[in-house]
Length: 396
Image 1 (cartoon, one colour):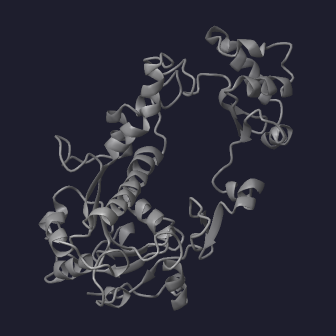
Image 2 (cartoon, helix red, strand yellow):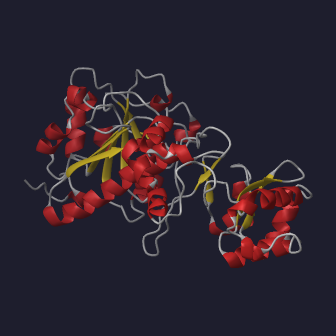
């Protein structure tokens, strides 16, 4: 076994800082063994790490991709202890299995069957540690006709029905970056599954497998559309619906400086404020808000009006109102917004601005995030004490 080199100063942190970090937050005392992968599983582990879990990531030293070299500026790498271990080398799987025996949670984001071929599948790991929560992150799930197929966020959205309603009503569906399936329907869902399994373990004394599929999660996030359709409030096709950008009071507009504002004045009292502050009370009757035949003309009037002033001037005008108008900020502007500054919504890790841990807790607040650091796993997780929360004995 080898450890990553310390040639990057960002990885040199005071030794006590990580002890303090792991001791803060509601998941303090929970050990998470993470096998390096891309996007959704690391995001889930970041959530667990931010909440106080002690996350140890195993990376392949032969890998030349981004997973082999965590970056201090990447929120998906922060707070980790990182050790290099080539699982294809003799004895490496045995080392990893020993780590799994000392962990509360194992997280892997590889294709179905890979961990089994490495000798680290859930059956083997749970035999060594019956209290282990074995969390698996895939695109299509552990079974089903597509389980062995490659895919990405856009594919999972497409097949789940979530993609069809994203994008302009007069064009094809638009990729929402990889926020929805990778992170909302993937990493976030995996973290929820892990937390639920940890709670259940307190009753049963036993671990279990969590099968989180991005295709399942994307479908779950689309539940609101199914609910609206059941109530007769959502059409079959994109366009003409309340939340898909068709409504003139729930969309974005271009301002005089080429920047944008977001308008979300759904409720009638908020819509009335919007029309009043725009000075359009003599042109638009707020009582006709849901007259879909009038939407094109209303949109045209709003677009023409917003185009007369720069974004920040509109922001100032609407700042004290409930008209639900906000500036569309870039990710680099967002940390400087007064509300985000007051809330501490963003933080700085090793000189890089990143989102702060969330949610917030009254008694067990999360620690300030730290950059990743390299360790020898045997030293990071001493062999004294067995697996399970806070070293609780394994239960058969």
